[in-house]
Image 1 (cartoon, one colour):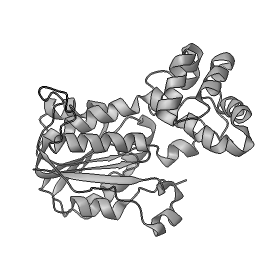
Image 2: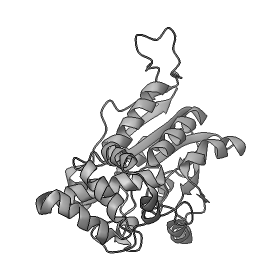
Image 3: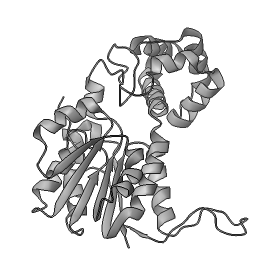
Image 4: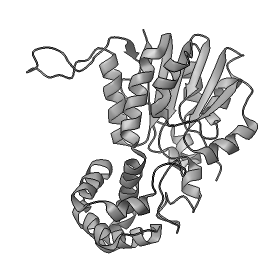
Length: 299
């Protein structure tokens, strides 16, 4: 399946009037958002496309616009790289989180419970260890916490116990034990939650998002914008909190003698509620259904 970037028109509008300079696409993928921005920029921007998946990046590099520089790296490294290389002026940063369609459609990647393969779940297959190896060593209590926190899975304890006992190494083996516990009617939703939870854990996605987003915002120029498309509540909660923290909201609580949460008054939040894809886009691209877009402007 060809990957369809989500809410392209909205992204183009968001960045249309930011100051000229550099736009960071922190989740480049096949470059759909960047190409749309480049076509509408009239040469005002240079682009840096970031992706930790070298296989996707290699394919994307074959037809990248000349104004785009690609970097193979985890976006958690962005703030350090931007500061070290003095990349400026940074006019915008875009994060389109979650899976690329190519991840789900490639049976060798292990992201889908509907395709039989080794249980990998890594965005970067040249770094870290696949889920199949991690699950051989994980203890039950840790796994229960992962399934509850990252998947909100109601059968977390039973599924964790079965995983620890059976140590599945393939997608169909994991799917089989989920089906036995959740039953035929509850299987699809339970499997989606479990695979999501394990994927987030294997790739340390939430910590990477917090580090990247919190570090990039201060590097934007005045009038620059940051936009984030998230696909589940865990991601969206982090985005909302970091935006509020940088817009001056204190999270210390009334019992704190003085503020220590690191709040900064450097952002204007443009989305009180996240923007959702239009019904027509969801009809054309069902994978856009859960997308939520928030953006803010540096002041």
